[in-house]
Image (cartoon, rainbow, N blue to C red; front, top):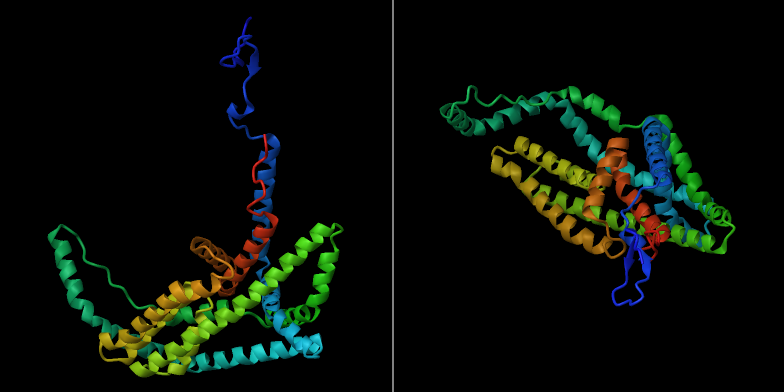
Length: 370
């Protein structure tokens, strides 16, 4: 019997019946439909990112209000169970949160305005303190000349004050964005229960409704717990920073503690910025460099313990966040929406992980069956 090249014999088969090769042994082939689907998905993703970037003035307040409203919805439900109308509870919650934020901003703004008016003087003092590094720099210059270097180290002038106004303009949203944020926040909290019901009933299939209900409940619970937990942790970091500043003799320890608590809501970037602020303030306020570095080093120890032990232990029990995913989300949303995007990076990452767990569960087949 003639055996074709695409056929094989079964060992031990006396009759020698040819069998076709298995499909598993064939090399994988990317179908044209799959390539088109991936291309369209990539183009759609690029279009969404471009729209979010261009229309930042609209989408940032709305997304911020939706995320904050989801976090604060459990408080509104608590007041509703105490026979407080949900609309009135939404107004009371927004007023309370705004009062706390205004108090923290007032603690930070008073010393910030005072220091900003003294920037030239403080810059001169800081530059004078940096003369302690003249001898190491001179030794480095001599060493570079001995090994054949043509020039020494370039001078590093201190940054000028021209960056202050553009930075404040970038960080400060407009009045229209504030109005859009507060209006959306109040209306979202007041109507969240009806929005949930409408979104769930929009699906005709019972399984789809149950899945949507589980997703919404889990998002609300996780975001509410995240806000409460992170707020308590950051308040503790702020109190500890204020005590450190008071013990070490730093100026305005209450304002520095409030600034530490506020900046700690921004992962990675906030603690680093606070460390730099404490070092600069310490170098200006103290006559020696060692005394100026005490508060910054103590704050670095606190944030190390908080970031590596306290926060992962508490939040990790509810929803584990991969460090690389947190960093990439932080970089993306900071590039897209600035500091407010950095604040939203972790909540949006939590929402994405919850959607992935329910829509793409681990026990579901991820590859097509042959």
